[in-house]
Length: 235
Image 1 (tube, rainbow, N blue to C red):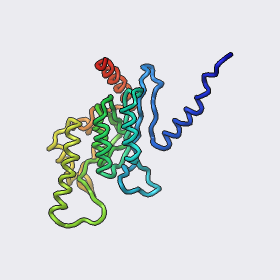
Image 2: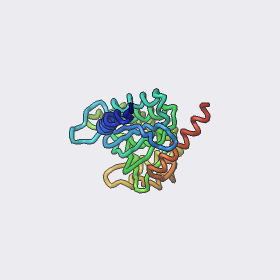
Image 3: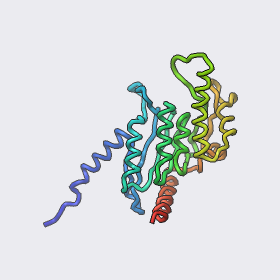
Image 4: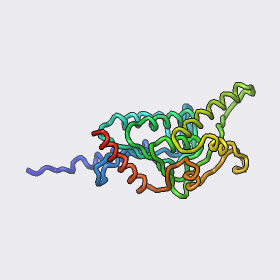
C-alpha cells in the first residue's frame, strides 16, 4: 500500500499564504543548509496605540511582538531575517519592536529595501548585522508629535528624553558616533521643510549606521553563516 506524502502540502501552502497576507511573515526552510529562517516584514507605517486609517499600510506592534516571542521560543527556528521598507511611525511601538529584536538570542540580520525612515532607523540597526540596498534611504530627524502640545519647559524636556532614548539605542546597536548622529538629526541644510538628514545606501554604511551594502542573497548568505557559527558555539 502506497502512502501519499503530499497530502499536507495544500494546507501547508495555504497556511503560509495566510501568514504572509496577514502578518508579512513566513518560515524559509528550503535552503541547502537546512536552516529554518523566520522572515519578518516591517512595512509602511509603524502603528502604535492609535489605529491608522484603513487605506494606510501598517505594521502593527501587537502582531510583531508575539511573533518575535514565538521565534525566540521555537527550537526549530535558527535565525531571523527582517525586511524593512517603512516610513516610520509611533515612537514607543517602534522602540518596543527594536528592543525585542535586539534581545533575541538567535542570529538576526536586517535588510533595508526602499527606506527605513524615522523610527525605522532603530529598527534597521537592532539586528546583529544590517544591510541596505544601494538605492535605499534612511531619514534621521528629531521627534515629532501630533495634536495639542503644552508650551512649557516640561514638554521640551520630555521630547529631549525621548530623543536621548532613540539616540542611545542607535549608538549602542551600530558603529556611528553619538555626536555625529545628533548632528545629522539636527541638520537644517538638508531638508527643505524639515530638520534632519536623508542618507542613501552608501552614506549609511560610511557613517557607521548600517554594516554593508547588499541585497537579499547577501543577507541570507550572511545569516546562514551566522547560524552555522552560532550552532558550533552552542555545541
